[in-house]
Image (cartoon, rainbow, N blue to C red; front, top):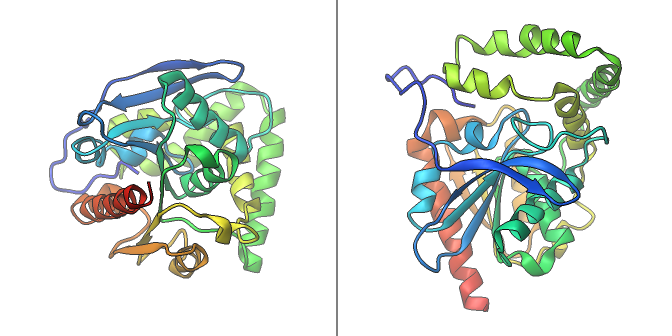
Length: 291
């Protein structure tokens, strides 16, 4: 998502401190942290599919850290996230995120999920309700498949994920370069291409399959913490109507609109970041009123 904007953007953005973190019984992931003001609430940044924490959130780190403690991690198979022979599950990503909070000694957080990170954030609430102060869900939905074309694409992705388990490492690396990274060289900065090259593509393909299977509609109306939904109004990846259904399905959620596509967080930060700050600020204020 670190796309060139044609305005002379720096080759590599300034990023907060990051380090590998061992999660007991789970594996090693990569985590960035920023302390924020003393006593500030903690936001837990959950990135989208085929991204990493940095690719997804590099435009937001500094602005968020002026108000909140910031924690961001790479999800399983993405970037420097956990490597596992187990099949990728969004539930495991949710539990990984809370394991990071355990290591950092954080009892309560505000998950902010973008795209795939939205289902992860929803699952953090469902599996660890007592630790969630509020939710912020961006460019995401309660489900991702409905049309015949989408379901056929999902079947193809499932087949590729199964094939990737059987394909030698060298072939998987070649697939990464040919199918994905070469398409990005004209759009992405070199640091972003390098970041994406770290993916375990077997796990990333399985993540796509997991996204296709996700459906929170049976329980989305149970969410009982203050929630803000950031809707990208020109989104060609997650249709706006599904983002609206997410907002409508959560009791007393608030909607915040960005006039942009799915990648507006990267290519239009001047629009997206202030909207995100308003959405988080409102969720935090509503949570404080309930405390």
